[in-house]
Amino acid sequence: MRNVERYPVEGPNALWQVYRTVSRFKAVRNFVFIQIARYCPILPVKNWIYKRVLGMKVGRHTAFALMVMVDVFFPERITVGDNSIIGYNSTLLTHEYLIKEYRLGEIRIGSNVMIGANVTILPGVTIGDDAIVAAGSVVHKDVAPGARVGGNPLREL
Image (tube, rainbow, N blue to C red; front, side):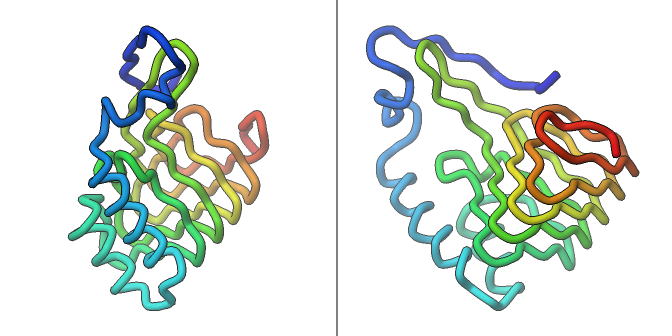
């Protein structure tokens, strides 16, 4: 089960009310810097943006491939350990805006983790050290250390 905080909303759907939960300035600033990082081919520069501008916790020698999309509204809720790889065009979401509620959750990715291309990681998920997530997977639950998982729904390989 994912570890998320739930916040009910009244009136229009939660996404329509997003700027009650995050400032417009933060959203625009984060969007601009995330887009720079997505296209930046220099890994230390990319990690500097993630750590110093967006407030993420990123370990040594961690590599975010081209086009990785981190959460625009709450990137500071993302932690990645040392020597991990986040594959091409993957998405790391720490929020979900639904019809009657929004949810927030930390993403914790351990050390020496391999995330394949086009993986979506949902809020409230922990991926243990030395795990491998196959390309194209949707990570909707915790992944044990050393596990090899893939698919949608996610399963042990």
